[in-house]
Length: 167
Image (cartoon, rainbow, N blue to C red; front, side):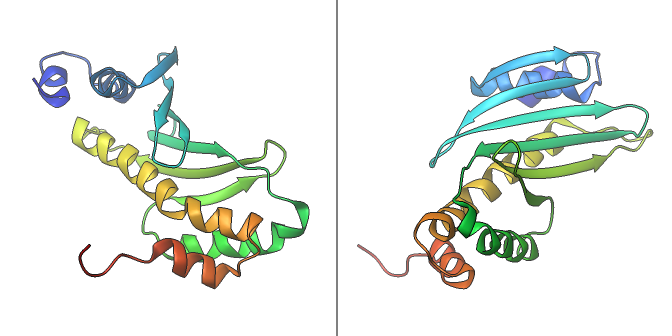
């Protein structure tokens, strides 16, 4: 039984309940902090990502925050911020920022929920997948700029290059 089929058999429409079902389905470590918030640890190719989703009924918004630790040297910060800006120009949903105090790279996305059409399981799974895809896609560029002294352009070109041909 898929996660969506399991969920659709229940009566609750709370998006955080759906996220918990997805986390259980994928065997992700998670902590249900309260009725409207959940935090998960998801293993990626490059590292483990911390993902939290919070529901704000007042704003009718589901907010996703995906973070990973990054402690770049201070002299790399201007180039890292330029890389963040260029990366944000390359994505359609969500955006990266760097929380300097916490030394965290952050991907944020907010989904407005319509009262007559709440979020569904597939939509929430796509949100999480998009966050992980963006983090995995741009992680190498952030590393190259911060520690290998690459320019933002060169780091993004190298990190986003796709293999051509056959081995």
